[in-house]
Image (cartoon, rainbow, N blue to C red; front, side):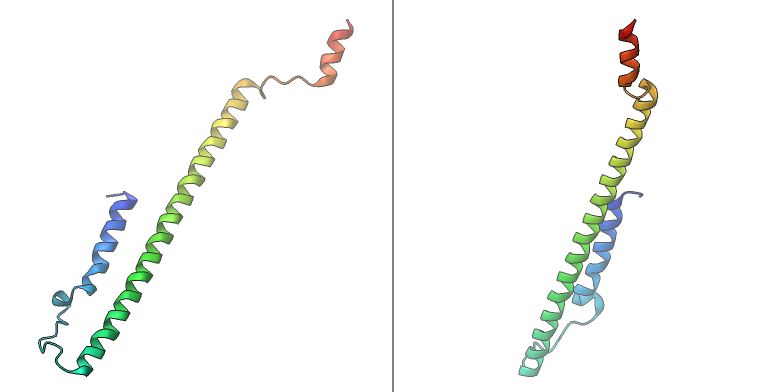
Length: 106
């Protein structure tokens, strides 16, 4: 239940309910016999398409945000891992150039 994709599926499923006419009770029983009815239906079709495009754009933005959060989390874990390595190995074993010269003079 804590999965991102589970909640994404729940939200997308709930958002489909207004698109199904018989659930919302907006079904037309007159068969759209008049031109006014057809024009109204065409406008509703365009509005439905616009709503679907907006939902798709929102979904894409959510997925992009999820990817960015995942990449940031991985980067943070990698930086933490590198810091632990630096502490464990004492800075990677680098020797300061002046210390190296002092040892070669003896």
